[in-house]
Image 1 (tube, rainbow, N blue to C red):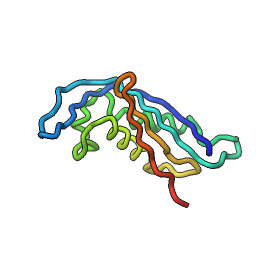
Image 2: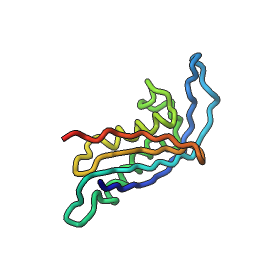
Image 3: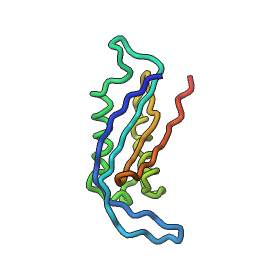
Length: 126
């Protein structure tokens, strides 16, 4: 199995919804996102996935969150904008219309230095 990863960044604010329904204080982060794709075979050039296709797609997705209040985005209307759910939203967006030999294996989101959440995507079944 081969893996390739790309990393991107965005700045955004959020407020987690607490169990009683209230919101924690509004605060922001400089989020670091690393996407890892995996696959069993390489193409004729000897690569799993062209970085020049994966990186721009990640940048495009992160741009929809950059300088935003995550709670206001449709993706977080029904889910808390936690680091874990940010990873899920990014994985779902990456998986849409991204066919080929490779699949999204993991999305890692660091909201603050040393505070990391990872979402592992199940490998597609043949």
